[in-house]
Amino acid sequence: MTEVRVIGRDGAERMIEADDGSALMDSLRDAGTGVEGTCGGACACGTCHVYIDAAWAARLPARSEDEQMMLDAIGELVEVRATSRLSCQIRVEPGASGLALEIGPVP
Ligand code: FES
Image (cartoon, rainbow, N blue to C red; front, side, top):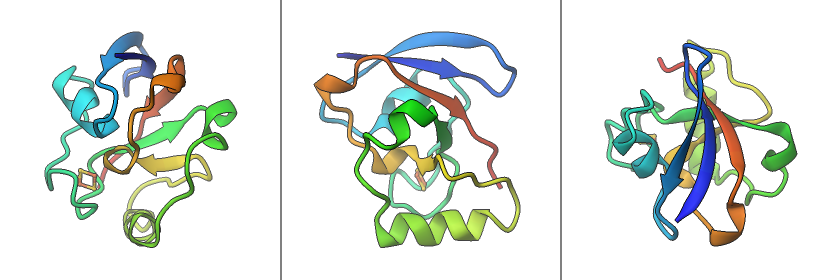
């Protein structure tokens, strides 16, 4: 398990436990953070949009082409930042304990 610091859309901060090796979206959804993940992690809905804390953003693998395309698409409707990621595309790594993020707006 990896601890993740989450700021909700209401501004409230909480810690959740994320399953190592799983998609971050699954743990965010299951913890009731407001992440829906309606496409099941297929990089096709944008409802798992999060803003990664700047200090952590550079430590994550780069966006894939598919993730970038989806972020470009939702960027027509909501604010996409340099630190925006689709949490379904982020694999939880044991070394990521303390990862911090804010639940992003969704289309
Ligand atoms: S769950 Fe649909 S894009 Fe991430």
